[in-house]
Amino acid sequence: MSKKLVVAALQLPTLGMNATRLEFYLKKAHERGADVMLLGEYVLNHFFKEFATMAPSMVKAQTKKHLELLKELSIKYNIVFIAPIIITKKDGYHKTIVKITPKNRRYYEQQILLPYTHWDEKKFFANEIKPLKDPMTFNLNGFKIMVMAGFELHFDPFWEAVTRKKVDLVLLPTASTFGSHNRWREIVKTKAFLHGCFILRANRLGEYSDNEVKWKFYGDTMLVSPEGEVEMMLEDKESMLVEVIDKAEVIEHRKSWGFERELKVREVLNYDA
Image 1: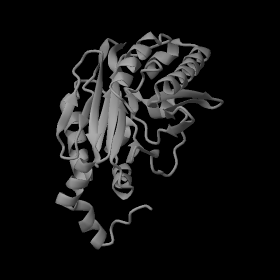
Image 2 (image 1 turned 90 degrees about the vertical axis):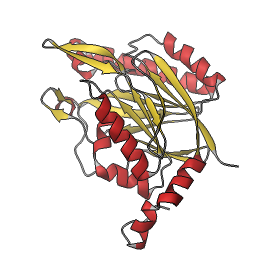
Image 3 (image 1 turned 120 degrees about the vertical axis):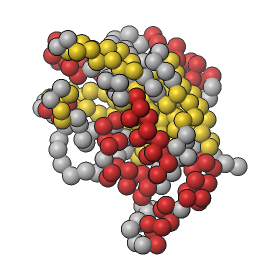
Image 4 (image 1 turned 180 degrees about the vertical axis):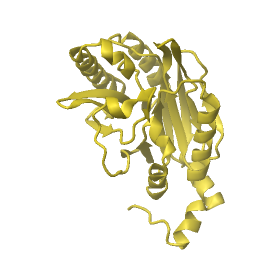
């Protein structure tokens, strides 16, 4: 029998200190048998440009509250959470993604951050700049899953790791804006096809005004199949995606197209154990 996994993604604006909506959606996801839940960037914490008006103690308290809540919900509903979250350390804020299960907690610190004048996470956060390592990978119900930060989608070394590790599902939390719908859709579809994996992207909602420029986070949370087809997409309203994925689709795609096979016979690709 082919392995199946029930994946879920929440499309929300920043929750702030309000946790009521999380519980509401988790009950619904649990009823549908969800195994893993993905949240977008800047949902548990405010958008980083808003931190200038927030006391560091408030950011720290917000993070602590949500980590405790996700732990409680993970235990209560037996679900794995993947959620971007801001960690406060002595040298400043660190942009991370946390994996929370009923038994443990694990962090992945984003390795490449946006470096642009209007969106300079690289300067704002204290994430260390060092040689790249493979993103967080874990196994769940027979699926190999990789967690990749939104901006990291653009860099080939991360996708080489997807192929080398035989990843079945990439979880991609984002905070995309400025009408970039089509570009993101096409990149995600292409990456799923070329690397023979499902991609679940969760993009946040909400707005932020900066020097009379409005940043509108537009949703477009989606599940894309290994064939590069959008299997489910949310639009621009608060909502939740819950879908069943089948590992047989991954296996069939890799067998039919044989991209990895052609690399392996040329000694370009060495699979991880």
